[in-house]
Image 1 (spheres, rainbow, N blue to C red):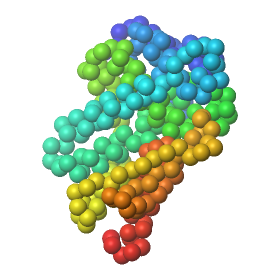
Image 2 (image 1 turned 120 degrees about the vertical axis):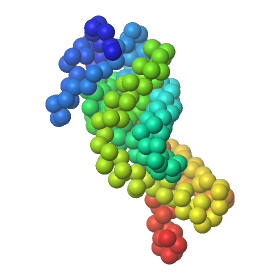
Image 3 (image 1 turned 90 degrees about the horizontal axis):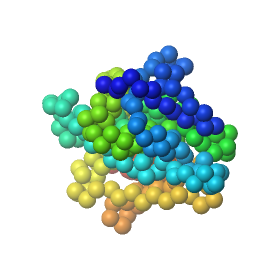
Image 4 (image 1 turned 180 degrees about the vertical axis):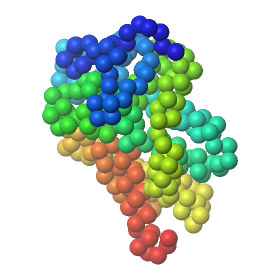
Length: 257
């Protein structure tokens, strides 16, 4: 359990807010947050690159490296969580549920639920364009928060305890429903059943001319050298998911599913 010391969060203007005030006003709910010993790590986890770009004199690091680490931790911990919770399920079902449990929309909900939406440090442009409600920014911040907490504690059990309380808050029926409509997994299953064991390959690039604080990505999904679908999105995950949906729509139109 966290000790009684106060966890401090930094607002965009640099002011500090204690943990006890972090309540999502839309849900009237307060989650128990872990304590950070290294406030610099916490500050970095909340710092988007748009803030760094607009404030170069501060010489601060954005949260993208922490996001990478948090993404890896959440992938592992969600897999472990589902493996232990559903001994009756096979690999395909577990994979679909994991995708639903840690997809962009769900991670954005986690971020909002613990108040990170009000604590993200964004550039003025990103803030004006609704950054605090942008699922891509919210999910990325949550991943960075998890990565920072691991580095701060060096204790996987503490990270596991925090993350599991978030997973436990998701209704079982929500995970079940969303897991059945994951387009990337559905397309992969079709490929395995109709073409072979070679998995689909996604090639994703950032669209030219889009600003750093509001990027757009374009993804193409291929089997071997043949392109099956293309999609756009505000994140790489969304672009790849839309490419898979496009591929499914194309093969359905050809009467192959």
